Image 1: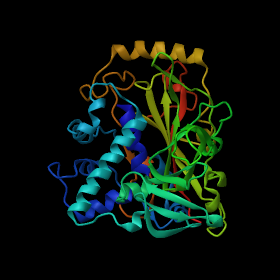
Image 2: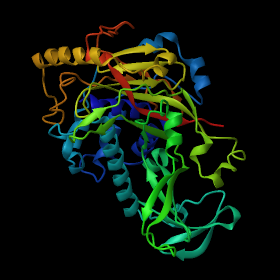
Image 3: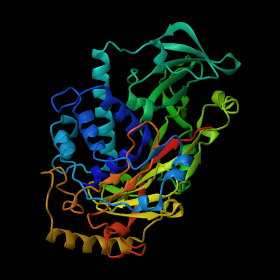
Image 4: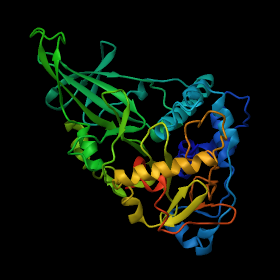
Length: 450
């Protein structure tokens, strides 16, 4: 169940998400018979963690924390109530029999499920979408005329575009924390540009191209123009050549980047992309990812948006339907990182995190997978019926408790609990394990205050 546990681990460290659950828990009573079973389960999960200390900022928190508090370890836990809730929901049915054990897919199901529960509650309370939910570029104006179920956007040089909104428009705490929007432009000769605003959560990054070796290059590749040929209703007739180009329209407070490491081959199977993909601890979004009319406004806003890396989910192994997941997480004091591997944790350096996406030797990986399968077959035990039936890497392990979740909407230290003995592994671990063959798979960046 490590694919599930890795996601729970990064979410409990995500301050905006934790604060959302904390506020909901204070305002409403929760039970598994309510309309919000996922929210209820996550609140119960949040309450497993005690607060060591809190402060108004990371700087003040560092001054308050004592070194010994960073080494407090407790017992591991198994959040059965989360697993039990998931078993009851049709959304997760593809995971029940081991057919899908992908951490990114589980993250999407979980956030979408919580979003839907929030939408249900908000609609019952009379909250509905309104015109303010329609995105508008700061560098453009919107006319009152409706054009083909969209709206008319006037950009630079009085260039007009017919703009439409795709997807749900009712914002929830989940979309406000993790959701952004993409601007897809279709330029057809003889017609107004057609613009479609599409939500994203997370932002998918293709890394297969030879010229993509870091996430900056992957972000810029999103805007690469695509030439299309067809009948677009142009006055110039069929066979017109059009250009499609995608830009980032808006960015969320917490930016989730999914490195697309699995691609289909000619046989219908999947192949893993092992190449090294660099990622900075502090990310400045390149201006090239924004539409030209929006780039000019960046200077007024204090420059390009900046983000701080707070979590990394690693995938170990060859298959998307199996393997193993571990995480690196930045404590809320922003002083150091912790590496969580089931019930084993250790403090690590920032440079260890930045180097975590290194490409692995396929020969070492093959030997490690063979040895790991032999070891795990001898002691395999399923904790969640068929939910992780194909995940032979962690079925006998429980999730690792992490102390220090925040009880207030302020900065809080997070001290990772190890096993009950407080056991930690040294930096030089045994290399005969699939866990030593890893690549970064999911990155969480939180927006830095200007």
